Length: 129
Image 1 (cartoon, rainbow, N blue to C red):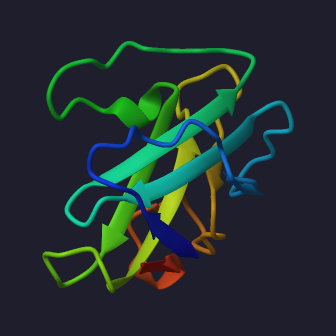
Image 2: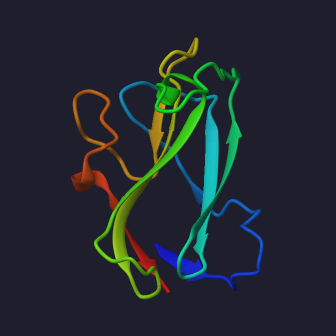
């Protein structure tokens, strides 16, 4: 996926351009998720749009288990400090472990037998312009 560079004074993206539709481990037909990603050379800007039948927001403390709530996540692996010209590996997620209908969606499929979003071999490539 190409990650476009925006001027530093620009606002974060406000239009979702990519879907998070791989339903890992369980079906979640009522959960719809889309996202956009941009950068300004030093910062990454993410925009998520989520539709789901239940919202849970219980874990609000530092390092609390937010994945149990209505949660979106972004994990990436790269070795450079600057974003322009960088090729990185990442995945985008939507989970809700403790919702009435638990779900585990991702941009790229995660082919583990149990939920594990921290596995870089299932990340997709991002190319930062």
